[in-house]
Image (cartoon, rainbow, N blue to C red; front, side, top):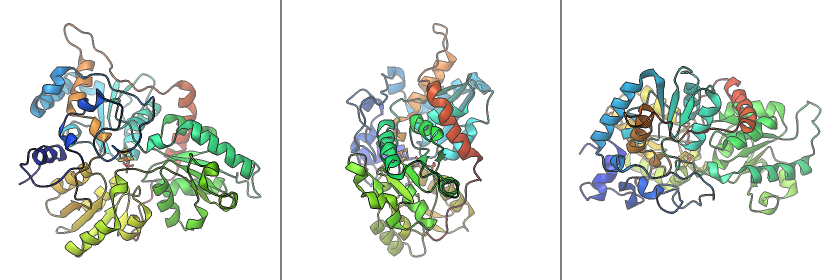
Length: 438
Ligand code: 13P
Ligand code: SF4
């Protein structure tokens, strides 16, 4: 049986019409079921993570969107798009469900979507089908007249939530006490903060205000080079794995990458470990990419001799080391596009992207390393029902004037320094391709 999308596969599995397994039977329900309930990340890979208090909550979605069939929602989205024309641009991350992504004007990884934000300054509204930190970034990079809309406010990112401004500020102050503030003979300051794009605007602002920068998974090596030119050490947050995998590939020894766990005194490291550090790694991770294991790679190689194993750098180091290659979502897509027909790929990243690549490339064999269907639980929160709701809001009706729903606005005092850190990233040299031999 050909399965068109992850959504469809989950529906078929949940009714027993198809074989396979998902990490939660609740994935078959509409995300509004979880928006209305207790705060949490909902079903999917990060459902076990603790959601911080005060995380944005989504209000009730009107019933007509909850009960509509996929075909009806698709028709309503298309009609609203047609009415709005160039007034709206829809951006979509690779991990979105196909039922949403098919309506996007730009599809890409977080670096490409940040760039795409700047490409349509004429559009009144940017509808961001991704997660909260991406919509914040779009607001930072768009013009003040443009409204950035996140169709479901509960679409956060559990990894981004693992570092908050208070804990990072506390860490910074403790490290400053340890390292002092004086530059070395080459003019390099003791510490440069580097935040992964997957972080709040407040953390990007912290980096902008402290001589630091933002990186994405497609330019982390370029950005670390930038930081090492200016600083003796780097404080890298929130993803320990991206930080470790990238620094290791650049030759930084593991014993010079101590961890900072905000719940432990001195981050759980000793003063001498921190003095010897080249990169201090924040104790954050992605629950989607934590699911991938070396055992899965061994199984894939056994069952598919000759398969190329490519994983995302948010995977743990042992998994990246056991893979043939690693790189951002766009790297994975391009590697598949460039391969000779008949290639076999075992992929370690979010299932919506893997399944889509498999459908788009029938000339290859492409499968996810994890046999369980377990999408990113926050990307899952964007559903075609929410997309139809925000677009029809922009259109308005005879009885109701147009309305901008779910606008994401970064406060001015945060926006200015956050933009500085983002502009430093965009000005850094173009993304380097991931290494071939991980
Ligand atoms: P990319 O930058 O590769 O799109 O990754 C974003 C992300 O959230 C991966 O989990
Ligand atoms: Fe966040 Fe992981 Fe989902 Fe990416 S895949 S948005 S890092 S939880």
